[in-house]
Amino acid sequence: MTSHLRRTSAVWAGLLTTSLVIAGCSREDPATTVTDSGTTDESTDSDSSTSNDTTAGPTSSSTDTTMDPTTTTTDPTTTTTDGGSFLTTSDSDSDSSGGPQPNGSACSSDAECESGICYMIPMIPQGFCSECQDGDDCPDDKPSCSIDILQMSAVCTAATLGAQCDNDAVCQSGGEDYYCKSLIPGVEFILPQLKTCGECGDDGDCDAQICNPFLDINSFGGYYECVDPGSVANNELCSSDEACSSGHCDALDTSALGLPIPVNACGECSDDSDCMGNQTCQQGALSMMGFSGSICVA
Image (cartoon, rainbow, N blue to C red):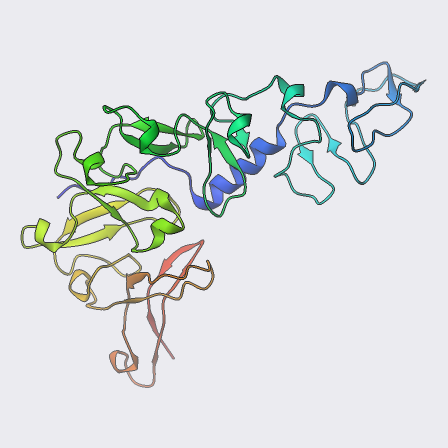
């Protein structure tokens, strides 16, 4: 069957980091930038007003402007708030940076975007200006609203294998017999990006094979595919014991990510009886580092 397609989408940790960088690289307020001719004598308060009093001083190559602790500290590359977070830009509103921003820009509301759409991802406090929020915003020939890491926004695409979807009709719009299914049952309510077009909806769609989810925890990609029995390695998602090479498909501990849904992966054991000697079966876990199936430990 079709081999794994590694979708070019943001890694969870990477996407969060990138969103911080984009937020941090917002345009400076011209009224608070110090030129080479001198430095400001008075600090700028939180309403973005700037003192007209300046004291002439030695020519400086620095363009840094330091405001009081309750406002924003700005250098040529970053913008930070008094709390140390890069998620909030300076007090100047969108008018100071030219109004609504193009696709790919960081945003927190639709009004901040030229497209009128601020694509939000659950678990990440800042969105990105995009051409779509879901499939309803897309044309018939590109019915899938999917994340494009190169553009740092959501774009309308053809419903290919692994494309984000809302229903089977989206996945079958290109003539392929694909199915729209959540990679982890229930996760679509937390991360709708993990509902994608796949080869199968259940085992009945596979010829003597098993319908099994493929997902790299570090990406928003993945899909259901038909796999041979016993072909799924440990530490990979599974739909049944039969799919795993070890014969053990068990629930992971998801508390590290706070996911209130079951996630199963192949591992070494299901209980202590599957381990040698005095070893015990340690439950597998799901974290930002990936999947870790169950193992036998001394």
